Image (cartoon, rainbow, N blue to C red):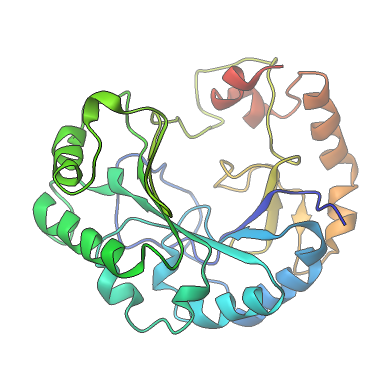
Length: 280
């Protein structure tokens, strides 16, 4: 059976151990799903996708029940995708018995700032990540992300560090570089998190939300897009409703049909600049 969504984002926690400048500050209080909460969401959504990205905001590697959550997904033949800031990655992963059952880990190298709360140098940060790559690069996919190409950053130092180990040059950087069988560099510009207070406004555009993906926040709230980190477009709550009912309610269908004709119907979508370059 063809799954409706390529992936479903499930935010198992919205708490992060870093305070990176590119992440929009939310108005929500910190919330972490219990493994029982996650199992309920999994049971209600399992027929709709084979890939679960365990984040919207937050640092999933610090969730105390990550092993149990990963095991639930593995037993249902689902693929687990994680995204981490990469700080203290050894300590965060060394006791995970289900780590080799994960499908992909994205390491956001753009998380590094010189005023990071751990007071680590760039060299020590990268060496710890390199040790992790060396240990696990053949067990699951690893994507090294630099999503800050349009801002001043320390990418040259980061790329020079890896250039001494892997056979590529900064001059050959494209959107994605395959380093080895399961290791990639992924490049993109920094996107602007949509906000109702943004001065940006366009009614035309297209979004893959509700088509390619959908998101469930840590409180069970369903939102159409992984960029709605404040849960402004609340389509329903999976702790109280069935997934099919949420997908077929009037608000969901209005958003879906609007983008089918190239129109944003929600204020937050009109304020989102990310949709503009996806316009059909």
